[in-house]
Length: 161
Image 1 (tube, helix red, strand yellow):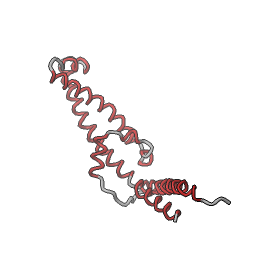
Image 2 (cartoon, rainbow, N blue to C red; image 1 turned 120 degrees about the vertical axis):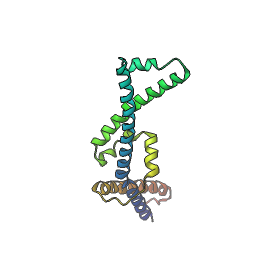
Image 3 (cartoon, helix red, strand yellow; image 1 turned 30 degrees about the vertical axis):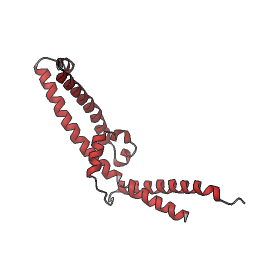
Image 4 (tube, rainbow, N blue to C red; image 1 turned 90 degrees about the horizontal axis):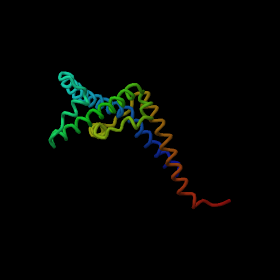
């Protein structure tokens, strides 16, 4: 019975982890769209600053003086910071294979993008080598975790020789 439960854990792990390559691809596509949108904001602001002979920092300093402008300045600073951070994540994720992305959860940390990708994601049968490999990793991991948990639960009830 314990072996059957361990196999069920393995199959569950395989089914779950085999979805990661496609999900990470969809996250990557959404992230690219977000970076493109932020790039347009950054380029537009920088062009306006340049047109007026200002650096970005100097132009940001001029966006102040009223509560609205102070809030807008903070919004722009947040957008510039997001653009820098998300562009770096995008570059790293694009350079990685789907299997390498498995080791980069910190690069998939934009909560809005993650939630949007998850909302539209539909599981499918993995038909790629990456899907098969992650399914194998998931099976071994799921089997191992389930076997360890069941072994710990059964330990107090084992007979001593």
